[in-house]
Image (tube, rainbow, N blue to C red; front, side, top):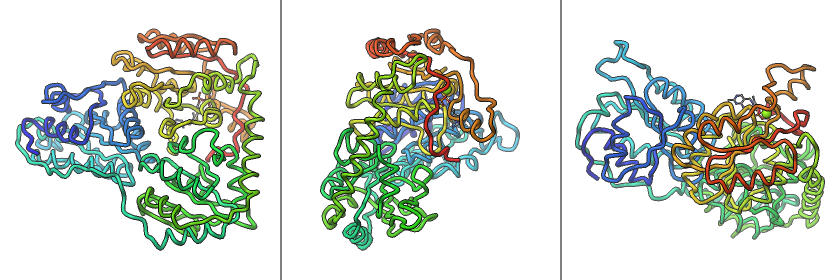
Amino acid sequence: MRVSGHGGNHAVAVAQRHGVNVMFTLSGGHVFPLYDAAVKGPTPMRLIDVRHEQSAVFAAEATGRLTRDPGLAVVTAGPGVTNSVSAVTSAWFNGAPLVVLAGRAPDYLWGSGALQEMDHVPLMAPVTKQAATVHDKLAIASSVNDAFILAATPRRGPVFLDFPLETIYDQAEAEVSDTVFASTAGPAPDAGLIAEAARLLASARRPVLVLGSDVWLGRAEAAALACAEELRLPVITNGQARGVLPQGHELLVTRARGVALAGADLVIVVGTPLDFRLKYGRFGSKDSPAAVVHVADSPDGLARHCPLAAGVAGDLTAFFTALAGQASSVADPGWLARLQDAVRASVAADAPLLESDADPIHPVRVYGELLKTLEDDAVVIGDGGDFVSFAGRHVEPRKPGGWLDPGPFGCLGTGLGYAAGARVARPSSQVVLLLGDGAAGLSLMDVDTLVRHRLPVVMVCGNNGGWGLEKWPMRAMFGYDVAADLTPGTRYDEVVRALGGAGELVTSPGQIGPALGRAFDSGVPYLVNVITDPEVEYPRTTTGV
Ligand SMILES: Cc1ncc(C[n+]2csc(CCOP(=O)(O)OP(=O)(O)O)c2C)c(N)n1
Ligand SMILES: [Mg+2]
């Protein structure tokens, strides 16, 4: 492929070859050529400009996580890059395919104190698969091509490139390899290690299969479901794997995860790190710890901090297919039944809260109402503390890939960026953003982006007038709390109206359903501001600290 014109043309032409059709950005002179290429190039690229760089990168991360092809964010030099760091780090933790292209002070003035002159690479290197400066204008196209390939190769993640001013502004002609990335498959997993996993399964009485986001990102969801069904394994789903076994599936025991992980004698964890969300990989009881098989899509993803009975790295579809083909399970028939009972008991125990008429509103009632309106392919995004933890418990997706939480980096402020990215990636699905009132403050100005770019999203703010997830743990630890209160009843719906969207205030349980109906029908960014009971605490067993 031959590219010509300024460096922006080179970069955008290559991004388009990788299927990118939208650039999320916030303006700065260092990156004008990339805009010029987007609007004047042979095939225009949609440009969505935001109000804070973190939202541009979160939006591109969301498109990456939903489409499973790399998203693209473009940020200007210096503060444009520093404002992106938290979002790039989220993508790094989430294994999200993402390319971030940035401006940079010119090489010919380096050391003279040019505007925003700083070396971004050391800042980005620890939180990207690669961070580099492209000093040679003839290398822009091939570097961007390599960046897209690297971002999409397991384990996926962000790649950062910056371009000194003259490099991106100068005219040049260059060739770029025609080897465009065609497959996301990783290396084949080792057959001997799969056989070892099959052997462990063949003698396990109480097995559990845990599925994580990389199952979705690696397009292994169908193989995972088939494997679980073939071997009749109880399954717990995490992150973007939620929905691989749809809500109500007889093998889905996420609701009984405590019982399952404490009682298991073998836990096979696929496509997610053995981090704080998974007890650091220590399952079973003290006296009889469970054997753990960890399966990751690349060797780097395998846990090193806990003992593994087997560690298998490679393509996840190949793993599931091989395991289903050669393993058999002699699980105690009472094991699945016990977990199913625990699921039923947990669902039954929660039912009254979903219908609660409590005044002030119990946050769970919001989900009782939301569940009635959610369609199967809805994208549900969570940005907040307790309010979103309740959603994690009560909103069980019916399809995979529709649940977007911030992941293990746990960064507040993903909300409006993720919502913009989700709307672009899934133009005809419901997109619902669940916002804590605290979290709302970190990105709500980007409602302006939704309005200007006609991106309708239903936002539901669980407004408890404080940073609930921090307030309760601090009280438990210190006997009091500080820096945990916000103004009660703040009209975040009015903020959205002021920015050109719509919204309303909800103060009693009966108003929630009709308000959600109006929000979904409105076709505009719409915030339902639900004043919830400030005294309700999410029943948390761990703070992750
Ligand atoms: C960027 C960032 N800052 C701080 C935190 C720590 N933190 C985690 S949850 C939380 C409270 C969130 O409050 P809110 O969004 O109102 O939800 P609530 O818990 O009240 O339902 C805070 C401050 C974080 N995770 N990310
Ligand atoms: Mg709050």
